[in-house]
Image (cartoon, rainbow, N blue to C red; front, side, top):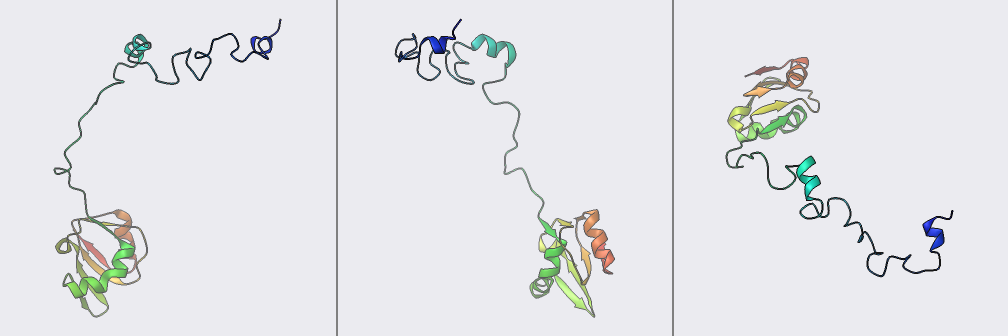
Length: 140
């Protein structure tokens, strides 16, 4: 028995009329089309929360993100901190107060090759180990 496609070769609409043969017209659309109409029962049955907003999002004025600084950036910008008055140099050791500079947390990305004594509210373990490896310290 020949397939329907083969049967209708040479006929422009394959027996569907003009409009229903175009795109996904006869099946009601693609994907999620018609969930409010023809597919409503399926939507109510399998995906009740499909429409509308769900959950709670805190207002951005209430959310405060940590201001962070990486160890590599600290090594590059230590002279800038000295000029701004947030750091001082005693011998070959820099004493940096990141809390006064407005930095909340020290992160461990990058490398540092100078001795730094850092005062900061919070520091990651990686940052602490990198600074202590060069002979510095982290005070929280």
